[in-house]
Amino acid sequence: MKRLIILMFFSALLACGCSHSTQSHNPAWVDELIAKFQSEPVGNPPQSIYSYEYNGQTVYYVPPQCCDQYSTLYDINGNIICAPDGGLTGSGDGRCPDFFYQCTDGILIWNDCRTK
Image (cartoon, rainbow, N blue to C red; front, side, top):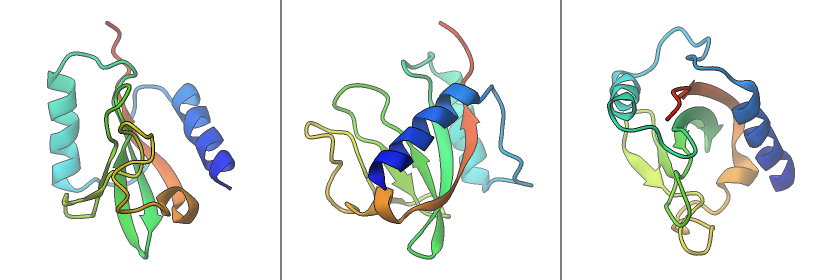
């Protein structure tokens, strides 16, 4: 299952253009996060934001930018829940080790299509 989710994650990255999801609207803090990312230099890989259902709630996942950095998982209000992956071990901060096994309904909300 984890392998399938990771494969879907990378397939979504490769297949998506510079766009928002088809969702009618994002929480204001997500739009603010997008504006922040757009005001910064292009990352490698470029920044992206996904929404998922996890533990009965909508959450927002921002993948790690590089190397040993953590990812970030936010709740619907923009509070940080955990770091599901990344870091020195690649396993995140250990506060939500089941995220990639339990999350469903992944949607690419935004990805940065700028080039360096």
